[in-house]
Structure formats: C-alpha cells, structure tokens
Image 1 (tube, one colour):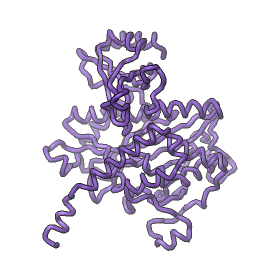
Image 2 (cartoon, rainbow, N blue to C red):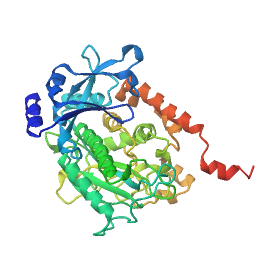
Image 3 (cartoon, rainbow, N blue to C red):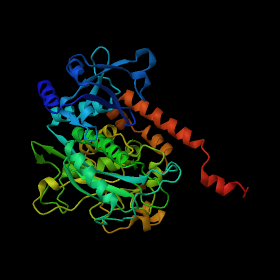
Length: 445
C-alpha cells in the first residue's frame, strides 16, 4: 500500500482519528493521536515528538525526533466507536536531519532484514505462540490475581465466558489483518493461547504488537485484565512465546531436506547450533524481565537446559513434526522466549545467533530425543555437555555483556540502552522486600 492507497482507505473506512504508533526499547507501545485530516501532512512532513521522555531514546539536548508512517501497517481499531473511529499506523523513527534513529527497535530489525535479503536473498520467517492470562478485575488484582475461568488444557464449554471472550479476540485479530489459525485454553487456570500464521520477521513483530494491544483492549471491554506477564502466579505454568523459525529464498524453504531423518538441511542445523551457542546471552533479550526467570524453572514445561530434540519439550529447541511432503512446514521452535520481550529486539538477536552458526559452520550436539533432562543429575548433564540457562535477569545480562555478536546485532545505541534498562529493573527488584521474605524471616530471626 502506498500513500495514495492509504488516504483512499482511510476515507472509505470513515476514519476520524489516526494513532501513530511505535515502541520504546522495552516493547511498550507508544502512540500519538491526531485527526484524520492531518494525516496527509503527517505523511509528507513526519510527525514530530519529544524523544527525551521515551525509554531508551534521545538525550534531553537532542530530544526532537519525528515519525515516518509505514502505510503497510494500517489497521482499523475495531473497539473504537463509529463516531470516534480510529485506525493505527506503525512508524519508523527518524532524527531531525531525516536519518534513521539508531535506537529505533523496529528500524534496526528492518535494516538487518533488508541486509539479509540484499546480501543472501534470504527471508526470515517467524511464527510466534504468545500465551496470556485473563484475570478478573476485583480491586486486589495487583496482589492476588484471580483467573477468569477454571478451564485447563484444550478444555471446551459452550457456556464458558472465557471462550466467548477468546472468540471475540480472534475475530478482532482477523479484522486487524492477522491470519489467526487456532485459539485454545492453555494448561493453567485463566491461561490462553491464540496462534496466528507465520510471516516474515518484520510483519510478525508488528503482529505481536497488534496482538497484545488488541487483547488488552478487548479484555478491558469485558472488565478483565489481559496479562502477558511470564509468571503471574506461583505454582502454575507461566506464559511463553515459542517462536517457530525458518529461512526461505524465492519461496523455497531452505530448512528442508527430504533425506534427513528430521527433514532438516545443513543450513537449518547450523542455525540451530548458532542459537544454542548463544542461548545464555540470548536469554537476556528473549526473556528480558525479572519475572521471566520465575517461569524458566524445571517442572512447568518451560525449557531450562540448552539442547535440541524432535519430541522432547524439555529441550530449548524443538523440531515440530510435519505431514509428509509439507516442505514449508519444516521449521525449528525456540521455546524460551516469553511475551515480555520486545519482538523487534528478540527477532534481531535470534537471527544474529542463527546466522553465526551458519557462517561459522557450527555443529549441532546430539538431539535429546526421549531424554527427560529434568530427571538427569547435574553430573549426568555435565557429562552430556548440557548447559543451563541463566537463573536470573542479572545473570542473563552479565552473559549478554560478554557476547559481542548480539551487541553488534542490536547496535551500540540499542544495546547500551537495553542493558541500562534491564539493570535498572534488576536494581529496583533487588531492593524490594517480598511477602515471602516477611513470612520466612519476620519471626524466625
């Protein structure tokens, strides 16, 4: 869609207001809203804003920045009333002189994917599975969140209110351009998953933002809280965002090889080896919150140990089964990302790690099929060469600081601001006194 088409669509759809959207370094959606009659001017001249107030953006002395509309990202916001009908467009962030802002997460992924296409002719395809919880809004949700339903994995009830909400969510996502494949109840109470079809990495990252915004809006309409917090409740499964990945060229899946036992090409094995080699540093980007490491513990189907397998869900990377002859379905599934990640940064880092494995010709370890890694002793894991992910955000950031490849993938500006943001979160968390500590120590010491 070009500018002319966008202006035509906006008129046909009777849009009254436009939300110009972008993300900060943590993946939080930011928006400037304007009347539709200023859209053409905004497209021609950009939309100016103060970048000094946005996490990870400009210093105060260079705060003026502007947004450049990407017409391809136009979508109506279906929850807005007709008399105030709104649409959104995602934007690239530019410096005052018109150059791309190096701290723009979306712009960085866009540039690296363009480089991948120009130098190799390759396209990175990603299909994420973001899980989320629906909680009642009861006045104490920030302390004791209450799940909205009592269902479990794949449960169905014709009169289940959560099913009604999830069905509306899928309808809204389809209206906003996501190709929804399936939705279902997850393992934990109040936990759900809606899967949408894979696409190129930039479109998919955009879709993740659309997904999260839409689900929060529709949940709020029903008086509910939609949470993408990785581990909102102790003792039950947390929410992940498993990422299915493949690389194609001219529509051909380069991960496919009919002669391999797993139908994987040597390029795919190199890609896997690269993500395994960088997994500990990668965790800081794909699982970037303090709470992420409450999910990444043994016993709740979340991967902790670094390895790959076809049928083993305790492995970090899984090779999903596909129907015979389904070449495009062959892919790898990275299982430790969670929905607190900024998708632009996460996909950037995942791509860099995979390409490093290809370019250096790294070899994959033996697949961990039919091995329950959780049941192995520390000594047995060491003998098998199975490493473990960091146990905290601080440990993950410390490892990330030793990985120059991931630094280069994000670029100096994004990387330094990302580390600064994550360490600030860790420091704030470190100084808190939790309920557990009070119960444990108040009278015992």
